[in-house]
Length: 120
Image (tube, rainbow, N blue to C red):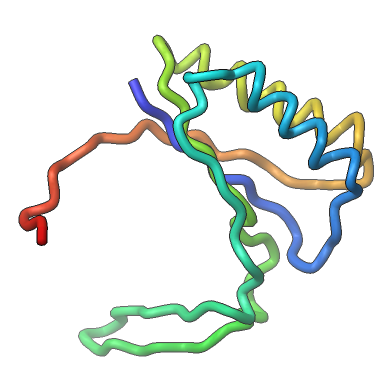
Protein backbone atom coordinates (compact mmCIF):
# COMPACT_ATOMS: atom_id res chain seq x y z
CA UNK A 1 0.00 0.00 0.00
CA UNK A 2 1.20 3.48 -0.80
CA UNK A 3 0.31 6.51 1.28
CA UNK A 4 1.02 10.17 0.67
CA UNK A 5 1.65 12.52 3.55
CA UNK A 6 0.91 16.22 3.14
CA UNK A 7 2.68 18.48 5.63
CA UNK A 8 0.65 21.59 6.41
CA UNK A 9 1.70 24.60 8.41
CA UNK A 10 1.94 28.37 8.42
CA UNK A 11 3.74 29.88 5.45
CA UNK A 12 6.91 31.93 5.72
CA UNK A 13 8.56 30.35 8.75
CA UNK A 14 12.15 29.16 8.36
CA UNK A 15 12.84 25.78 10.01
CA UNK A 16 16.03 25.41 12.07
CA UNK A 17 18.92 23.52 10.38
CA UNK A 18 18.76 20.78 13.03
CA UNK A 19 15.26 19.90 11.83
CA UNK A 20 16.49 19.24 8.29
CA UNK A 21 19.18 16.91 9.63
CA UNK A 22 16.68 15.05 11.82
CA UNK A 23 14.28 14.65 8.88
CA UNK A 24 17.12 13.26 6.75
CA UNK A 25 17.95 10.74 9.49
CA UNK A 26 14.29 9.72 9.71
CA UNK A 27 14.30 9.17 5.95
CA UNK A 28 17.36 6.93 6.27
CA UNK A 29 15.57 4.92 8.95
CA UNK A 30 12.58 4.48 6.65
CA UNK A 31 14.84 3.11 3.91
CA UNK A 32 12.97 1.75 0.91
CA UNK A 33 9.62 2.39 2.60
CA UNK A 34 10.13 6.08 1.80
CA UNK A 35 9.43 6.19 -1.94
CA UNK A 36 9.51 9.93 -2.63
CA UNK A 37 9.73 13.14 -0.67
CA UNK A 38 9.95 16.83 -1.36
CA UNK A 39 9.17 20.34 -0.32
CA UNK A 40 7.17 23.04 -2.00
CA UNK A 41 8.10 26.65 -2.59
CA UNK A 42 5.88 29.37 -1.17
CA UNK A 43 2.49 30.21 -2.61
CA UNK A 44 3.97 33.39 -4.14
CA UNK A 45 5.50 31.11 -6.79
CA UNK A 46 2.25 29.28 -7.54
CA UNK A 47 -1.20 29.73 -8.97
CA UNK A 48 -4.70 28.49 -8.26
CA UNK A 49 -6.88 27.26 -11.10
CA UNK A 50 -10.51 27.06 -9.99
CA UNK A 51 -13.75 26.00 -11.61
CA UNK A 52 -16.59 27.78 -9.88
CA UNK A 53 -20.13 28.29 -11.16
CA UNK A 54 -19.09 27.06 -14.60
CA UNK A 55 -16.19 29.52 -14.95
CA UNK A 56 -12.47 28.87 -14.81
CA UNK A 57 -10.46 31.39 -12.85
CA UNK A 58 -6.68 31.54 -12.49
CA UNK A 59 -5.18 33.40 -9.53
CA UNK A 60 -1.46 33.93 -9.13
CA UNK A 61 0.02 33.51 -5.65
CA UNK A 62 0.44 34.36 -2.92
CA UNK A 63 -2.89 33.24 -1.57
CA UNK A 64 -3.73 35.51 1.34
CA UNK A 65 -6.80 33.48 2.29
CA UNK A 66 -4.66 30.42 3.11
CA UNK A 67 -3.93 30.11 6.84
CA UNK A 68 -2.04 26.85 6.41
CA UNK A 69 -0.35 25.66 3.24
CA UNK A 70 1.15 22.39 2.10
CA UNK A 71 4.88 22.81 2.53
CA UNK A 72 6.05 19.29 1.79
CA UNK A 73 5.06 15.74 1.04
CA UNK A 74 6.27 12.17 1.23
CA UNK A 75 5.12 8.89 -0.25
CA UNK A 76 5.54 5.72 1.80
CA UNK A 77 5.09 2.13 0.70
CA UNK A 78 4.12 0.18 3.79
CA UNK A 79 2.10 -2.85 4.85
CA UNK A 80 -0.73 -1.01 6.60
CA UNK A 81 -2.34 2.31 7.39
CA UNK A 82 -1.14 1.89 10.97
CA UNK A 83 2.46 1.71 9.80
CA UNK A 84 1.98 4.86 7.72
CA UNK A 85 0.48 6.64 10.73
CA UNK A 86 3.53 5.62 12.78
CA UNK A 87 5.88 7.26 10.25
CA UNK A 88 3.75 10.42 10.38
CA UNK A 89 3.87 10.40 14.17
CA UNK A 90 7.66 10.06 14.10
CA UNK A 91 7.89 12.95 11.62
CA UNK A 92 5.81 15.17 13.91
CA UNK A 93 7.92 14.11 16.92
CA UNK A 94 11.04 15.31 15.07
CA UNK A 95 9.35 18.70 14.66
CA UNK A 96 8.32 18.72 18.32
CA UNK A 97 11.91 18.11 19.37
CA UNK A 98 13.78 20.37 16.94
CA UNK A 99 11.20 23.11 16.28
CA UNK A 100 8.89 23.19 19.32
CA UNK A 101 7.14 26.42 18.28
CA UNK A 102 5.95 24.87 14.98
CA UNK A 103 2.22 24.27 14.76
CA UNK A 104 1.14 22.11 11.88
CA UNK A 105 -0.28 18.82 10.79
CA UNK A 106 0.41 15.90 8.52
CA UNK A 107 -2.50 14.62 6.48
CA UNK A 108 -2.24 10.99 5.45
CA UNK A 109 -4.01 9.73 2.33
CA UNK A 110 -3.88 6.33 0.67
CA UNK A 111 -2.92 6.48 -3.00
CA UNK A 112 -4.68 4.63 -5.71
CA UNK A 113 -2.54 4.39 -8.76
CA UNK A 114 -3.73 4.62 -12.30
CA UNK A 115 -1.75 4.49 -15.50
CA UNK A 116 -1.98 7.74 -17.45
CA UNK A 117 -4.07 7.33 -20.61
CA UNK A 118 -1.06 8.23 -22.72
CA UNK A 119 2.67 8.00 -22.50
CA UNK A 120 4.76 10.02 -24.95
